[in-house]
Length: 199
Image (cartoon, rainbow, N blue to C red; front, top):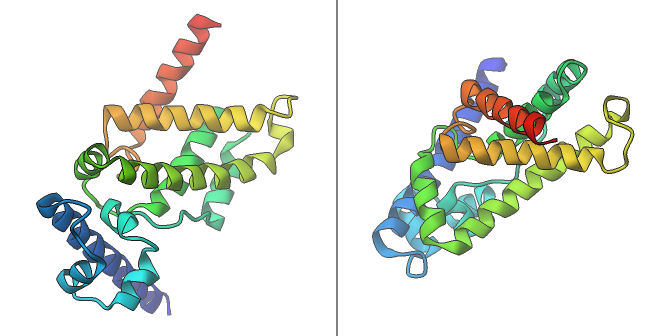
């Protein structure tokens, strides 16, 4: 049974990737405004219905984004780590949630180019990141015993985790999608050092 689930998930990932690849290539060739969903589905070899099962908008398909998710595995990992290092736990949780929204194995440099060339794509990207931050925030707020005694502490922690991830992404664009632990850890340590030396 596990094999069939894995095969189904692999097929979903392949379809997700092929739609995104078709959309990104067309937009890089011809521009965002001129490319249509009809052209994307024709190049990807899928139906419009399949397209909209995977992506709510053309822009999401071009950037390779879907709605982020929170899995039981992420919750368990966070609960296990949270007592030892709150900032690292928050960064790892947020990075894991963001990863569920992105095409596995996608080219982060191409995404960066697309979001630089087309501000509306950057807006879609940031909306999905905000969705991921909201999911991670809910998890952290459900662990009040781990937080400093302040009603704003969970939001501050997510803001810090988001800043670490943005910093890591700027240093190494594939650090989140490729689950690049060393870059994320280096980002966390850089933030710790700056905070220690400025507070």
